[in-house]
Length: 343
Image 1 (cartoon, rainbow, N blue to C red):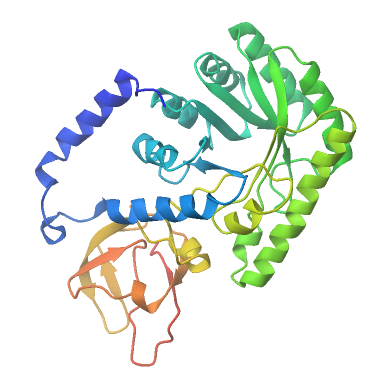
Image 2: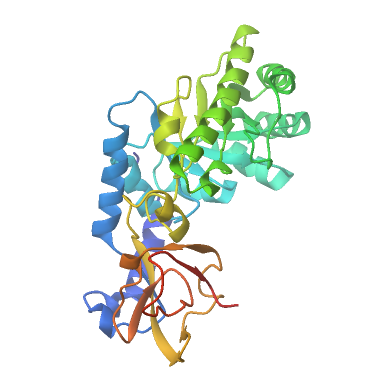
């Protein structure tokens, strides 16, 4: 990795100075709500992923859309990630300026401002993005030609989540030809995300769904290779499917993100990873059937997850939370409890 650009270093020092009075204080002395990062848990999560990837040829690309932190991203690279994945070109710019050389916008990059920014970034780092339409290819080519750079392009394949992506090998082939022929672009492979599998809590069923998705993705790659367009990269997976997908023949890299800091949903899928980022909140009202915290739904996300008994063990007056409200447990509550943030 390169050293971070001065802009990144200056921003870090400015934020550090703002929070300097809180550094070294105990959790109980902090003003709430407070966003906390447990470095021990973070490093443990990164170590678990590194150990899990040690015996396979598939590489790890850490998706940063969850934490968006250059510092955590650099730690992920230090723990073996070949680079990072981003949701937007703006995230990619920050990561490249933080010294990370391999940046993949795992999304379609559409619009003249975004494609120009991506093309300019490709002058200073290895930059890739995804496409699923010829119009996107032409727009990227114009931007890269104007900037005098080369953008790596992967075709996005819909593995069953029904979000972005082509639906078949026949749909992918003409796009591969168009990318290969386009000035300023390089065809490097395929990307997909079996996010629908991560909605399944039964491990056997989830792994079966991931296998079906990989059969589709690698089948498209084989079709392109047979027609003269071999894929250097076949990228897939998330935190819910990283282990099974990383062992699937033909997959060259995985792109999980939540594993580093974790959340309630993914911890229900893989409890080996701990919560590294939490919201410290104070109870401001206690009723017979509920408690109310000072971290409202505008403070943290309103998603839902699965909490086990050990996740619900909190001090009487302070709450370490990834949600904004929790239903109180009674003597008859079940081991697994559903929570939803207050709105």
